Image (cartoon, rainbow over all chains, first blue to last red):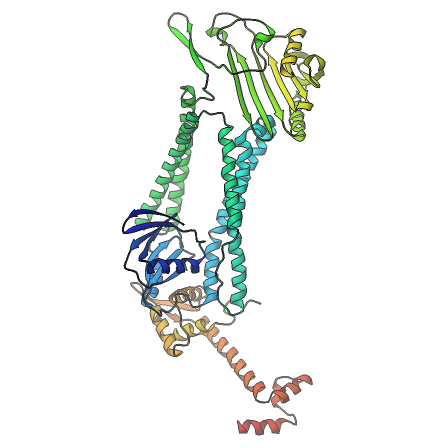
Length: 479
Length: 137
């Protein structure tokens, strides 16, 4: 339990009792009252206590499964319930969602619940309306994540398997599902044992906290999985913080708007169904607007250079166009395994050398390009440019999958024919090589495979290299 | 095997329906049941609320009056049938108890010979013995 002292007469506690653990909650509240703290209200994440003279109070927790968070408060059913409880000497202390908490100073009160079977049935009904929706929603989220992952795997496995975010998100969501299951399992065990006890004429059994250590381990694992997602990403620290602000602020704002609308409608005694429709519509529209804003803000940040990918070592220069305008050109100065200057000793001041890296435990991927500014923005100089991807895998099955996917990237129709054809690999200094052909004509694109080192390279030259240049390139790429 | 809903009534259900043979409000039921049973049976407000809801949904009681937060109820025909059925069931239990407690050996002997429960008290040679025994009781 954690506590944060806000005022001398008020205190917040974060209590981790399961929702159905009425015995644990009642006993704890009784102890708190004996120490001089009375429950004032129960929020989503913390319980608020106020100072009272220490008293021996008896607490009772009950559940109203038909209550909804969208109901105007108090409902007719709640009013009747409170009337009955008051007549038996019970005073309402706090209520949260479907849980009502009462207390009495009577040392020998009539218990709030006197029929264990009825009480158990009520708790089951309440839990069915909370546990299953939670499990179902996270299960659906997982399905969406896995669908997204397999879609990316099908489109570009090299990038998908080397992207920490793509690989780790399904893992994190699976861990979250396991955590939810472990939190739900004790309830089902307790329910089963209590049903047997009540059927035999006994009382509902106290609940036990199970799987706490395992749950904490899984939670720690889920947090650890976030580390490679942050470290392996392509954003700079500033870019990462900016991204989190751009995403978090609209989401928090939309959430606040939706909750405010719900509470306002409840105060106006709006019927439940109408409140649900309006609140959910507000949330949907707000979310759509937030997504548009996030996309717009992200694009603007990238375009203006406020959230660039790997801005370290990037120099922005102005290339004059005509007499009055300039063209802004970003020059990256990353280290490349192969430069155009290795093949053609040209000296050109506006070359950009870009190497975007990402890696996971399965594979590492480098998206490399050596570019010059577009011709229309620079002097009319034809300089060699090239672009190549280097995939290095750690497992043979990953390598085979990526190679097969790359080779299947070809299409042959009646009017078009784009394919890979095997070519001499010795000149490339690798095990296997394929050249891209379009309508029967060779292009300047090659696929190079070296299973021994787990390396797969897809290279495109924007000129036609000579055999000597190919030999040098092979030496550089496969040392 | 779990009991079917309302096939048999718990004591608390039974006494609630008993009280509602006359119109009364929910808050009075708790007091009345305690008085009727000499404090043996207590109905908590939470349990009373749940059972009143169940009875309303099963059309065994009906709401007759609403005065502010106070609501009054009365038993319906459906509820009376359930109450009567429960009474009959309890009566049968009581009869069986008397029958098989007073002369258990004789009664069980009839049953072992393939007789029925009714025959334990009809034209058998033990009838006189049973009649004498009952007269003693």
